[in-house]
Image 1 (cartoon, rainbow, N blue to C red):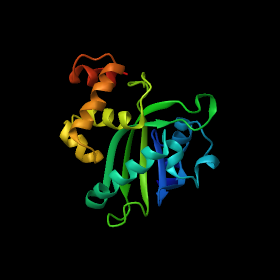
Image 2 (image 1 turned 120 degrees about the horizontal axis):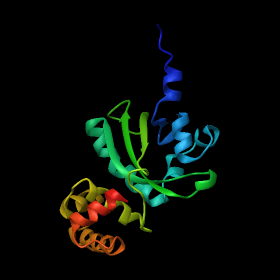
Image 3 (image 1 turned 120 degrees about the vertical axis):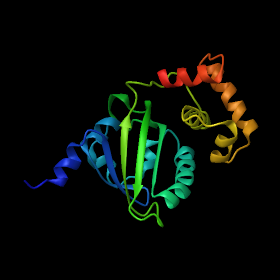
Image 4 (image 1 turned 90 degrees about the vertical axis):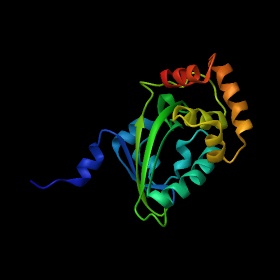
Length: 184
């Protein structure tokens, strides 16, 4: 029996997108449903439309480039934004995994998967772009020093964002904050 790869791509249980220079050249139905947009609205668009802000898109791209250049792949949990439909503008936690076709040119072409984590982890507090980034790294278990290095900010600045997150989530400690972030 021959496998219809196009049908498998279209019916995959997670959102999939093929990219060229950070632009979606194809996507499947699961991705369209997740972001609330028709395929025609996503294909040909920059991935920027899926991010809560242009700054987060730029910072994430800068962070991804050296890792994909070294490993050929990248994965993280991040807050993304629904594009259209009744939930337009709603933010949600998403697990994103990508693989470059050529490691030496990480953004030239790749395949990306998107898994909506909102059923397990809701976005409860209104967070700034930087707070969202720090929160994602905290959930990965990184220290302030490691987060600072990844975001190119000082560990002290990370601590300031961590304190803001604790206030917003009414957490008493960092483990309590991570628990609340994970639980939504």
